[in-house]
Image 1 (tube, helix red, strand yellow):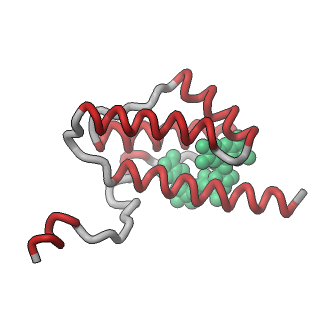
Image 2 (cartoon, rainbow, N blue to C red; image 1 turned 120 degrees about the horizontal axis):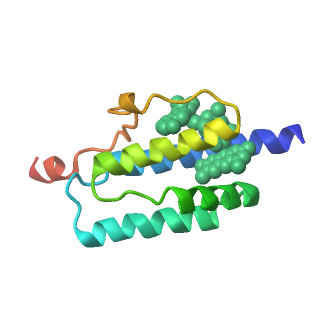
Length: 117
Ligand code: FAD
């Protein structure tokens, strides 16, 4: 049981990192296609999330709080909010979403600048 919980938590940390970093890299002014793609990604992420009970729980959260994909800041704020909903359900402290700014830096080179240099 302890092993399972450890693995579930490890998966959760990795998954949240990918989700928040995706939001941090999302365009400020996305095209309709980019917004639609992020929305589909979130719904499929929720549906296919490998921990079944978590997937079930997260899909219920999405029904109440649909993904906001109109801009980077709204997407990042939304992801922070729903992560806090999960934190709260597990009795964990809430993250201050006002401080999310540069917290999720992927260390990726800025592709446009890279092309120029
Ligand atoms: P995590 O919650 O994994 O967070 C990792 C790090 O992210 C934190 O250390 C902090 O630096 C940062 N962080 C914390 N809160 C936020 C926030 N609101 N916004 C941005 N960054 C933040 N576990 C269950 O037991 N039951 C479930 O139903 C369940 N559902 C899940 C659903 C999804 C979609 C995901 C991705 C995970 C789910 N998990 C669930 C796993 C759970 O959320 C945690 O990942 C796991 O318990 C490990 O928690 P942690 O305390 O190490 O930090």
